[in-house]
Image (tube, rainbow, N blue to C red; front, side, top):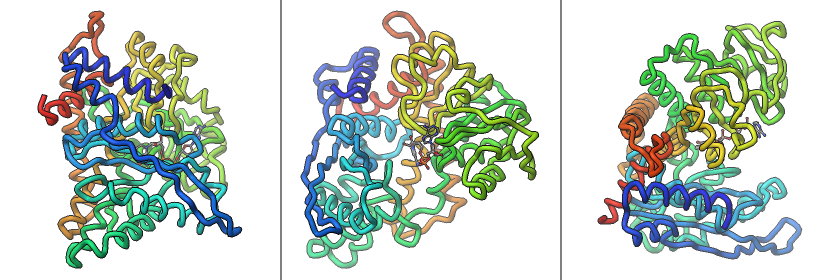
Length: 432
Ligand code: NAD
């Protein structure tokens, strides 16, 4: 069994025990409702035809249409998309949005393909899965190595494939079959910053619940891409002291607190984050020092935010983490073994299914706008996002604080609390 899928099944089994779920329901939730496996034939620039393996896993739709991204990566496998689709079911249920869970992918290294080849591959994928998707059925979105442009190609191909079957006045609604589209093609304002901002809202809620003042609470963020940057930006704006950020080449540590906006400007100018020690409006070499990504994880900070890769906190470094709270902005940054070590050390890990749910929540707002033919302004999108994240946090925190105990009498973790909420909601919607 693939590691991610094994972990997903184990988590489900643990929660099922606590909820005393019927075995039949557990067995049903362990497998996706449907797994689509297709071979795609794509004409390459040299005139030859190459075959690719592609998947779509539709895990569960008890709460609404299947929802989840499409990833282009050499490691995409059937087991991986199965695990990711299950996690999407839990994420949507935790966020309280009316979606189920799905995930798709193609086993490919997109960096080896030209733009034209990538477009033909994206279109071939949609033709293969078109009978199984739709705005009331399954709503894909971008994921690793896919972006608004890929969504634009996919939406266009999907609409072409459905034209003869749908009345012309309904054609516009077909755009709602994909989210994460460019703004001019029906995408939502606010989607770019949504995931990072959602995480910063969770940060504020945790701090409030633990009576931590933003001022003086230190934060280290691994990853300075879309999620890491916007998380840092909104955390800084809320008064937290962001002392470290990093990208794939390493990071910077600024003890007195850095300015994320200036740091990004500096990184873009220099092409690297190294040396970008930006305090206030000045970036000055005397303000900080370079750090490695491993050092960043072990800094003496209050809050650690992995916002880049999966499995960065493992059994090897979990004992060395000095933060009191981890906010999982990446998907799966803490391994199951590390989770146990962190819990035994009293470190709270806010799970990815809650912390990074701002992205899928805003996708839901995009879908709603497309279906009602309306365009929300950014203020409305971010206001709705704030309310949704606050509500989701309150529900999970409530379960966590109720001091439910696992079978071996240990208090449950926040991850377990989020899963309890999600699995219970899904099982109830399935009629159990
Ligand atoms: P991104 O490509 O914009 O940024 C990734 C960042 O990670 C970059 O700064 C990159 O330099 C850095 N990075 C890469 N390898 C690294 C390494 N070895 N060590 C440290 N940093 C490294 O991606 P993103 O959209 O910001 O996504 C980040 C994570 O958040 C992923 O796990 C993704 O699945 C998850 N996520 C993203 C969204 C979203 O809306 N973008 C939603 C939910 C979850």
